[in-house]
Every structure is written in C-alpha cells, then in structure tokens.
Length: 438
Image (cartoon, rainbow, N blue to C red; front, side, top):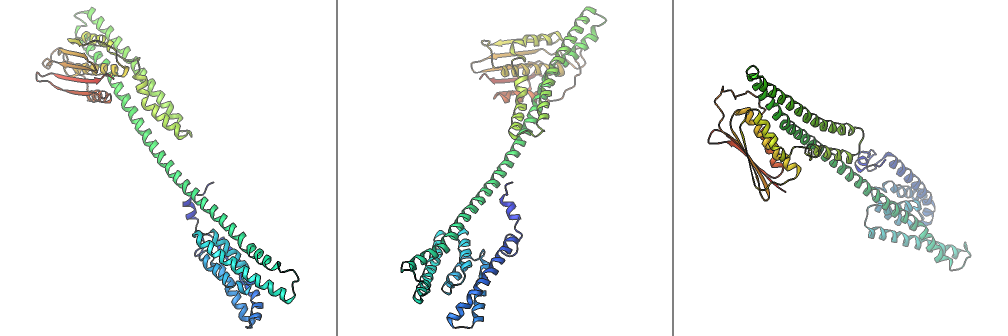
C-alpha cells in the first residue's frame, strides 16, 4: 500500500531530530563504533605526536562521536573527518559522513566541494604515509606504487559512499514526489466524488420534478374532464337516459386513458429505481455518473419521445372539452408543419393544462384556442371569457394544486421560449406561450 505524505508526517515519533527510534538507534550505534575506532587510532597518533596516550584516546573518542549528529549537521561531520584525516583517524566517519552528505538536500556544488576536499586530503595523507613506509624499507615496490596507492585509496574511500548517497537521495526525492502526487490525486478524487454526488442529487431532483410535472399534466386533465362529465351525468341521469349513457361512456374512456398514461409514467419511474438499486453495490464512479445522467434524461427520452402527444391531436383534445360542455373555438394561423417531438409535446401540454384550468376555475366559459405557425417559432394562446355567475349549472368544484402554471412555465422556458399568463380586462384569463422552432 502506498504511504502518502500525510501518513509519513504522522509517523514522526523519534526523539530530537530523528523521525523514528530505529534511526536514532542506528546513528547511536555508528557513533559508538566510530568513537571506538578513533579512540583506538588515537594511540599511535599520540605516540607519533609525542603527547600522552590518554589524551589521544580522549581526542579520538570525542572526534568519533561526532557521527551521532550526521543527520542534523552532515557538513560538520565531513569537515571533522577531513580535519582528522592527517592523524589517520575517522575512516568510518568519513565514509558515513560522505554518504549522508550526498543523500541530503544540499546544493551540488557544496557536496562536490566537500567530496573533493575529502578526496584530496585522503590522497595526500596516503601518499605521504606510503612514501614514508617505502623510505623506511617497509615496502620494496617501485616508485609507481606511491601515486597508485594514493589514488586508489582515496577513490575507494570517497567514490562509493558518494555515489551511493547520491542514488539514495535521488530515490528519496522521487518517493517524496510520488507521495505528493498521490496526495494530490487523492484530493482530486475526493473532489470528483463530491461533485459526482452533487450531480447525482441534482439529477434525482430533476427526475422527480419532470415526473411530477408530467403526471400533473397527464392525469389532471383527464380527471378534470371525468369530474365534469360525472356532474353532467348526475344532472341528466333521470331526464335524458341516452345522454347519460353517452356521458358514462366518455367517463369510462377518459378513465382508461388516464390509467394507461399513468401506467406509462410509473413504468419510467420503476426503470429509474432499478438503475438506482444497481448503483449501491460497489459500482465504479463513472457508472454512477452515467446512471445519474441517464436518470435525469429518461423522462425526456421516454415520456418525451415521439410516442407522446403531438399537435395533430389538438382536435381530439378540444373535442373532449367540448363533449364536457365547454364551448371551445380553435383557430390555426400559418402553414401547418411538424416540429421536434419535445416541442410538439410542450405545445400540446400548454393547451391541455390551460383547458384544464378553465374546467377548474371557469366552467362553462367560452374559450378561444389560437395556434400560430411562424417562420422560426410556434405560438399558442388559450383565452377564456368571463365565467358564468357562481352557482350556475356549469360551475363544478375541482381541487387545485397551484402547480399548473408553474409546470407550463418550466416546460416553455426549458426550451428557450417565453411564457406569459394572467387575467384579462374582460374578466377572463389568458395563457400565452412562444417556443422556438429549432
């Protein structure tokens, strides 16, 4: 599992400047070994320098223990190792110090300068010691061996820790970059998930609104006509049995049409629930977003498809209102032509809902329906005259939810059109809408 930068920061539990206890233990062990080494090497140094052996040992122990702060002050460790190189001390400290220096976040010129000083110091000391050994007769090799030994020893003590430190430092920086990138990607994924949830919630709200509007337009008109016919049936049941039979047949037909349209609407709603049920079982984020988008457009695609109402059915719609006792006058201006399914359905629903409102609030009032086919738009207007006096035979009490005009406005404005409604000076009510033909 990838460890992010935040988790790395929370994992800092070591003492002082150490990130972990094991790092402190490692540095303490290296410092102890380095102190023992320098203390042992302080004995010949004290003899050669003519100072007390105890002083040389103490000097070696103090110098070797500097390795303890290699993570905090790597430059100081390297400088101390270079300073005690002439005394032939601190080989472990020099190697570990160069490795730590090369792996730190320091400028390349600083690392190069200190590595060059360590290389040069080791080379000079080795050259002098080997030459002295050959002068004393301890070594009987040729003169070529002196520079060879100096160069080989200095490179062997400097190059490997330097290269290893550079490699480890580059790898560490790469891992930190990957952790930062992982943190950034995690934040982006969280943001995308939040946005996907917002879009899904928006899609669900849109779907509910569309279904509620469609059900209102479809069912309210049928039920209103059924109530009007039922009232007429009650009035003429005894006086004119034949007319009562016709009204009863109309009520049955309208009830069946309302049930059919309601069943289609509920079928679309069940399809949306099936998609929502599948969404909860570990579906990928992309599938959730696609399902949400599909849910938002399902009502438009299925309810608003070519199978829905169209302008050619206006005559039948007006005939149903006329059969319920309403006097409706239809006038069409312009060349009749076909439009996109969603435009024709919207125009049909506007007229349907306007007639429903007349049945509810102005029963018996004469109504004028005007439809205009223009070059780049289609306009419709439904205007009723002043309703008869309250208590007349045409008045029928119907409940009103107050959402009819809101739904019409949403439909028209959603297609880029203009919707206006309001009372007339003559005491009637007018509903006007203009929808772009494109």
